[in-house]
Amino acid sequence: MENIIQFNAPATSLIGGGAINQLPKLIKEFGIKTVLIVTDSYFMKSGLIDGISTSLSSAGISSSVFFDVSPDPSLENVYHGLEKFISSKAELLVAVGGGSPIDAAKAISILVNNPPPLNQYMGYHKIKNAGIPVIAVPTTSGTGSEATKVAVITDVQMGVKMMIFDKNLMPAAAIVDYHLAKSMPRDLTAYVGVDTLTHGIEAFISKKSNPLSDPIALSCINLVGKNLASAWQFPDENEAREGMSIAAYQGGLAFTNSSVCLVHGMSRPLGAIFHLAHGFSNAMLLPTIVSFSLMGALEKYALISRTLGFSKLSDSDESAGTKLVNGLTELNKSLNIPSLGTSGKLDKRKFEMVLEKMAIDALSSGSPQNNPIIPTVDEIVNLYQKAW
Image (cartoon, rainbow, N blue to C red; front, side, top):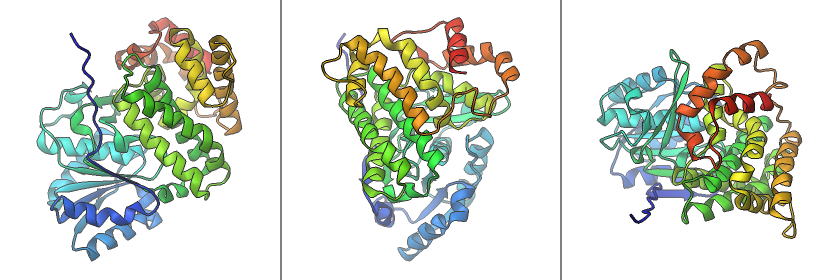
């Protein structure tokens, strides 16, 4: 049977400084006059949402706001957002923020036209009907959720981060304005920046990588290598911020049309149990997991190393792979990203008690099966311990 590639992307993407000013015009292209803005409490307080609402009102578009979205969006957040959407009589969702508001908006969107509970759609390709349109407006250059058919929602009672993967989760449109990312503090810039790099790397080395996703993944990796350090050191530098915003979009587009792998599989249980930010846990795991996976895709990892400038063209693939692991370790150090054990966010005793549960949950997510080397439960436990 022929290998058929499916490639999904937002129907419209507006990318560049000042793109947020095109939001009213974009909404009007949908023929819609009433929207619900999904965001979080931080952006409600920052004044950004007030500015967006005012611009929409001036264009004759009525808007309501739902801002009860936690850093790891929960089932309760989604259900409350759905109630708000129904009561507001909105016809479109505008998601403003990091991956959490965007993922929450995606989940709300599909529950408008598909029956709850949400957890029945956990996994791959289980959503029958398209949701209502979502316009994603990212304020961080990291998750790439504005360009993915993925939503990650936490089931607090079960202690599990549910990954839902379906083309019906793809935003109808994305507005990527790098000026919005300037509000990020330095530590968040670091975490989401390495998260973006993780997306590019995993999309490229995945067993589901393909001729359409590979060039986008490599471009993402290249842009992170050129711009992350500058964006972290000089938050107001336009060129670096723009480069990272494009990298984040490309990373999302690459992995949603390829897949993520072991880093994401192991990251989700850490987030669900210890409430770590997704990008933070990805960054802390990345060097350890790349080291484990090297020999499964050595040529590709070597190309990543050269693209990042960690090794030379003249280096052997083995040498380039080793330099990649060392380079990723040093990158974390240069961005003040700690290890799991030095982060101060995990209790060692609890960590050891839940190692097997996290390993089982990681493997059952499906992401590790896309890794160049597929680990056993015992090997995942060992990798958690090494990353400590």
